[in-house]
Image 1 (cartoon, helix red, strand yellow):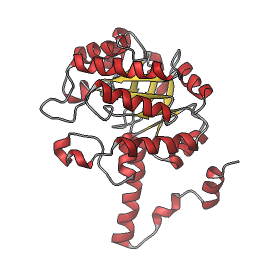
Image 2 (cartoon, rainbow, N blue to C red):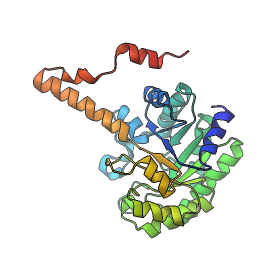
Image 3 (cartoon, rainbow, N blue to C red):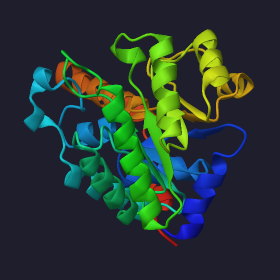
Length: 280
């Protein structure tokens, strides 16, 4: 990805509010780009599901060997970057390692893959200790910032705290997000913040831009409402991918249980898809 696209992505975070939808492969990224979005992000969940693997979750639930490795994930990021002409932000999970050095290496590889940004989360995968100690989490963000600076490329580093979705308090989330911003993150991401009161508190108390994720449970807040609350960036996580798999499973059940083809009534035509995916 050229420096111009990377800089465009940096500039999107300076003011206002924008929606950054999440793709899982080249085709989904092209569809999102065609809708006019100024940038797309990846979804680690959608990428994992597309490869028949579980999403990054508590390791004890499915074993650490089931998760996607860094190389596989970044190969998909590279494919998505090559498929579109807009900036791509990469879901880099917890950085594919515990140490700050692991995180720095992941960021460097993401920059080399063409990503214009990426998020690093503080989730550990352990139910006994779901978040990294805050001091270590800060060092991990600081190492990521150093890797970005060493690359010399524009890149939006996002510090994500999963405090709210593992049972922590809003105060915990604010403290961690602000610590990550102070350590060099350009934007804070707090999944689990989905109501106006929580989001409003975050906007007021954070020292940098806020990303929220919508669409995970439907929800009633619109982008316009989030803009009014002061949110800078809105993502949708794996929700589009999960909606697609819902339709796939419904089609499969109709075929297997009824032998009918009503699912095909809402399909896109071959010519529409060919036109969409045909490169000039």
